[in-house]
Image (cartoon, rainbow, N blue to C red; front, top):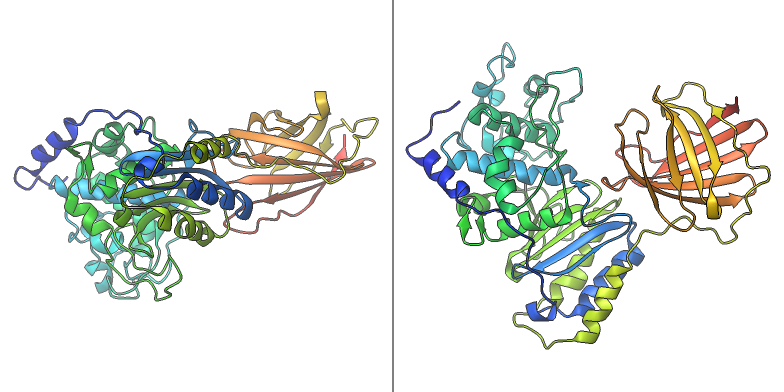
Length: 494
């Protein structure tokens, strides 16, 4: 562990230790904070109709929540996977460790890992600094491949450093992991444990979920799961440059640097991914900046408007989400309060209260077959790890999927008819997680179900076509890092 520089550690500890745990963010009407309720309604309506699919939104203006909504089965009290929005929290951990004198952004990376260093490190690797990790300019031309059977820091250090560090932008999630590993080396705590008293507890973020690598290092580049309001709280802290209700949690200079353009990453004026990159924060158009994660997890900060927009979603086109913010919300934010508009505010509240992802529907729903095909079907070995499946009838047109995956015990997933029914499911090789499902017969021989893994961006639509002693299983995800369509599987009745 590095020695503290002067009294920085004591001063830093005093700053965060004195901070009281936060309650809910204060609420207000949009008009009182200078936004017409109708403009927010237009944003929500456009998101509901044009984007598949937003999961939640929370808009904060002048420190007050003016609108919030969740598309059922997503809800205010459930966490959501943040993916790379996690990186902005790792950046904050670095900033705190720097402020406490534990490390510097000008520290060389290699000395932190003497046991994992290559036998003959290149000059470029020797030159790599913490600030190069922060700004995604490590000099590597490709990301290191991390997996369960490798030492992640060693794999990163073995990746060739083709360019001079600081000169070449490459979005590099393993580089974010290295920041987490360095903070752990410098402080003696994982990033998760280090941030608990310094960030999560003062902000009122309860029980954050953030897994570790096989080596016990918090996965700094992804993995954090928080509630929508937690994202908004963090955004408000960044907007206020580390001040939380009059208490200094993070040095203002850190967020000033982290959200400024540290490196160029393109020149397309219409892309929010080519406006420059900071320290694990993206620059946006319109003078804004953000943390973001795969499939549409956003913490958008608009300093010129004194506003934060927190969004979770499961989308293929992330730019389309930001475009709606620029089109509907940004121009609607006025400098002074507006006249109260009870009718528009009531309409907005009614709109967000009714938000829900559509259940499966058909133009001409089929009548369930008689007799119901309730037999168990067994599948040959397959990459999806599906072993057996049965479909049991329920009341009111509902059904239950009964499945076995990857040697697991029997799992039962209730599927509502025109409603979401909640359960739990461990699919493939993934751990058990909450799921909401709906389904119906779309043809006399075909049942379809949609499964929403509502703590993640993912949804899965399955089609089950029964033909005598055979069952053809087709599955497609809404979003994925690879192909969304899964190969069809054919099972035989036992």
